[in-house]
Length: 568
Image 1: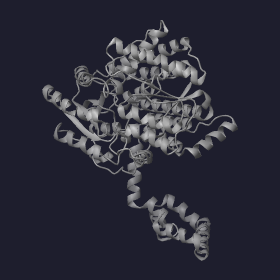
Image 2 (image 1 turned 90 degrees about the vertical axis):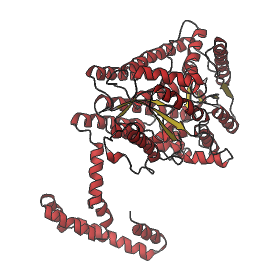
Image 3 (image 1 turned 90 degrees about the horizontal axis):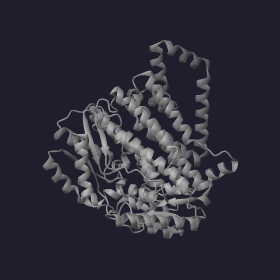
Image 4 (image 1 turned 180 degrees about the vertical axis):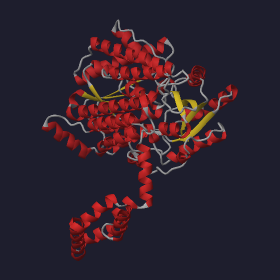
């Protein structure tokens, strides 16, 4: 809509004469479109290019139709539509159908509604009370951006993980709004397997900000601003500050049962939940992950802490631990670990079939965020079959793959589809990353103590415990090990400017790189705030490294610089 039209509509609200004039113009225009002469001109324009050009000029000359006609038929609009069509094209009918099919499945998942009228009314009211829920509809757009340029097996793997995670998120929403009595509020990076074994649901407190930024880079900024306006320093890690911002804005669902949190990922994250506890006023239990978890004494202390968490939940919710259910959950966790090891091993080949977010995203969702889901096993089995098929066919997930990379530090959630940009612009395939990699232990299911010991070891080796909070030797030791295993062309080190730990280890990374003759691309960014470093700012740093250090030529120069500051 043009500024002139907007101005006239604004005046029409207050001025009846302008309102009447616009209504008369609209009626006249509609009558013109319905006239036999206009219909005949349209029919002639279909077959005659000259008649089509004349009709377009006529529409552009009419004040009523000019704005719409210009957007549809101007050279700029035609060029934009061709670019959009090229962007969405998969190059062949099979992949085009696969993309369309999964796009429809994603919409169906996002549009899921409860069956009863009462539950539907509750969810509609929740959408009014918690406006961030509308942003979940942008999951479909996120899926399209993730899969841009992808074909074949990689296209299927990407969509399957995205749709599965969308369903898991909607399930959490249904739990907290429709069954709050049996739902606990929980921080990410806490052993979610325990809730499953106690017949408890959980809602991830980070969802309204830390997760939804993956759908829209700007939807959460109000929560960062909210907590800063309450006095928190603006250089605090915005991973830790966003959830208190959601609470202070009154936008976090409160089931009223219990809050489970931990001392991860750092002291800032640990302190932030004091605000959450104070504002919500619900019983809270904090798990204390030991700093040096390699000793038996420290791991035993964590196991004792987990027993305390179970006793707390039994007292506050009335639900009892079912050790047989925990055994089944742990067996499923072992299956996932076995599949994950195979996926990692396949990526050591010359044609790695599971690169970039196809490796990172399922691990984030079903190891770190919502571990223990029974439906995660069939998902990973599907991904395993697809990965094996690609491995046997020597079909790399990045086409063409020019550079193998190891990603260190968490990826940028504000530019969550930077993976597909790296593929299309430079042919970069991330074969392993910090958040995914870690020792995979088999959980002994013979006794309650052995199961909790296995879970304790698993969560002590999780990324935010092992690397950004654990002893510093884990950091460089794992980089050296992955370099030997995967033979990368370079290390992509993303420096989250709000994380003092990772910034402090940048010097050690540089020293190690010089000693081992390994190029390191150091990218300064803010993990959750693209106002600090824009998406183009991230691209510029990678572009400079690729051109000046790797002496590479871009696969698509049009992707070096483009404006997406206001895009989702």
